[in-house]
Image (tube, rainbow over all chains, first blue to last red; front, side):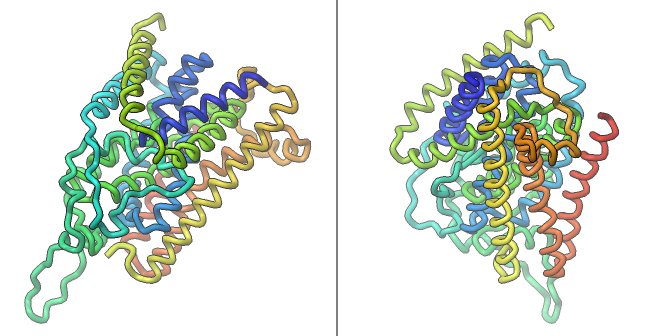
Length: 313
Length: 122
């Protein structure tokens, strides 16, 4: 009983901090369950994936209603994230706890460095609704606000509305068939470079299933920097994709007996409540102080994970 | 262009409702399971059967055992994104968008392969 309450409280804390900092819960839930409740990394990753799906489903619906997420782009890329997650989920059962701990430590260091480099986004007053900050009321911004989105230079975010779609010349009388990129683009911006998007999506899927995160940490920078998608749209689209990505991996864990329902229940409910709280109080919290504190926590956790990786197997 | 036409917008709104409903249903089921856990004095740290037995879920729910609600909640969690993809397949097919129909069907196929491989190895 007490353990369930503590687990749920941990989930609330992870969800709240994750929401306030624009991080997915996975980065916090996996260390919480491994160090706090002595679960193996693989068990914690499975629970984390469940939490990630719950928060993603709740917020992605709002992003779609607000026309921020690009459904076609998300659907196209998530074919590859799902493929990567399937491979990652199968690989996870062949890796030792030590290797998974080592990989998780590397991920934490990467995120910590990216948070240090993060810039405060410039305030904008001239963006279209599609490019406005995706902050659904009462709904967690989930994984994607994201982890490292703001480590990215805001070049593409500053695209002038309506100026990004290139006109393609057509000969007189010739019918120009829309290309794949045309289909993925909108009047507000033009998508380019599908190749890096495919590679990034595969990597995001593998990372998600192996380490219990949504994979937005990879998808958002790839979409924004390499594919020409405005940061806010990339964030929302990544969020939409996270559900399918994480579920492709979580299904492998579920069917192979890797998810403990008695742990998943309290944790997922706690994370959902915490993420909702975080999104409601975000405007009242000085995130810069929180972020500095969080970087310390991430680095400390990375050291603990590294020690676990080097410890007795 | 993505999502600008009326059928495309309708599909987006349908998917949005599906996702919201799935999230709400799954969290509600999990929360009921957690309450039943508390009432029964069950600890998440006790050894639990982690193998999914679909046949047991209705009986567990009728007997108000936490496992029934927790397993059903987990299934709804994992099925929500897949049902969103299934709705997309139907929606894009209705729009006669062959490319996106194939892409959506491909995503569903990947999920199906994952299920088949996992069942085969479990």
